[in-house]
Image (cartoon, rainbow, N blue to C red):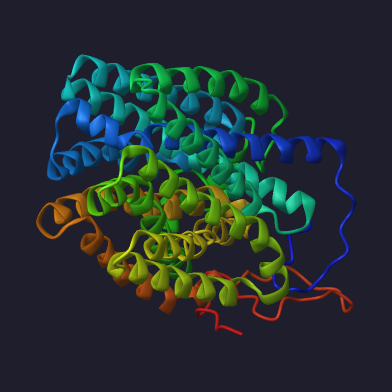
Length: 436
């Protein structure tokens, strides 16, 4: 199987079959639905807060409780995908995600914080494993296509969040309650997920044979999962993804509330600000495939880290709403590519992709889900915008280790006329790769 050449070096690959093209559309669709589900809830957080009568600190605790589900499930996601396959894993856990968010919406209607928390735990389990499985399927399809497409799949997630933000703004303006709006969206997305996973590709070893084969070679199963947690390259990629995930997750959870409370505007304007953020992310993810092909992973990740830092500084210190919105755009551009590039980097070796993606997903989602609630606790004391400035610390740390995401060289002999990426890395058990 010929992998993509994301550092500007073109290699000849067969034209993708109809099966691969259909699978690519299905992966994009599933990413979009994940974004739709997540942001349908996230964009209504001001209404959730008001409906439950919670303070910023209490909202932070509620979101942190909801994150426990994902944090508990993610380390096992690689084993789950190896056992069930990507298609069945996405289906089962997407439906669990929808059931959890529907339960949380019912809790808001009843004014029961405990029910909301229980629903968010269930949704978190669904979100985490669903995400890992669809990223693994995306990596399989990307390798079969022979070109960089993972950022476009994550752009699908962003398209889903954009659509959700628009629907949420409309629902807030019309006064549609959360417990009608969110379950209606979830029902539609669940139907489409059932249809999309029918055309997924089978990854390496799916169908019950992959785990046994992996155990024999130390690549899969419980042994491979444990080994992935001590690989320096995998952990450094996880740090890059952590910074990007926290940068994105903080905006998902707190951007709307920060705009509403600190600039004295209504909930609809907060939803518009969130929509502006995800629109900027989407544009960068679409553009990012060309940037990655031309300049390579390391250079593009450094660009994104710089944009994120500038955007956060502008948003956190701006005295006017329009200038803060400029910061939101830069923030969104900078948050766009760390997660998809990290997933591609973790899946460079198909035989070890499942445990490595599980590790990177666990690290990233720890930040994506647990980090923003902790920022909420900080916001109780210093305000939303000052709390968001704390994200600059992991952004800088991620910037320092971006070279870990450079692609691995293909194993085995390389033909004399083959193009080799200029910043390709050596295998995971060799010294860390150097940037270009």
